[in-house]
Image 1 (spheres, rainbow, N blue to C red):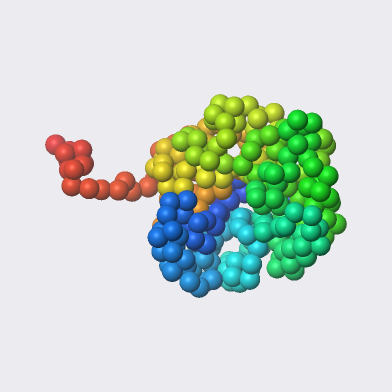
Image 2: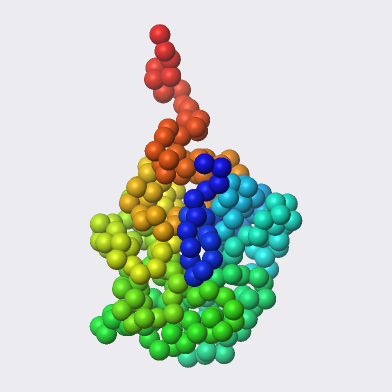
Length: 279
């Protein structure tokens, strides 16, 4: 398989593996010290481009992040290096309740930066889910319409599975949903078997995030779980801190999808000497 498997979202072809950004933009979900370390490592857009390029050359030409000039420059550099369009899934946030003009400005800025998708961030979406009436709050529906009118594809970035259920029940203009999903249940609001049921019944493809539980799971363990339990239309978003990790995540993912042994080198310590030696 030369290129990574793809799916359709809102009429656009996307790779089923998406390059995530937390491990490049300083969101470790571990500590402030590690966040600082990440930001110091990725002090130039070109360093972010180094990782996006690995994904793009493997056919995974999609990137998920907040919209800002730093990321836009990294994406443009990657496109220049590879000749591939990088599909940008942007999740603007920092919206103040009741100030729709701020959201309109955020959407316009996201469009001008070059994003293809624009989703209200989880901090915007989840407080606006009306679970009792199985619908989205009217202002959230209006935000989605603003995204559509701006020429981008709307969706919901969310941490609550009720967002999917309520969006589908109300017929909202949503093409996909971002949702945490991993074998550890990290940042998952219900058990993973319930998430599987919600995803299975979802009317649109799901973009899952945090497959390795922000570093709490080994890559073979975390990736085996998500790829074996998602639908063929669903996606996995993974963040990596260097090009080597990106290469490994891509090869591991392909090996699980193709049901073959992964061609990756095992990490080695002295305690594994007796396992490595062959008589």
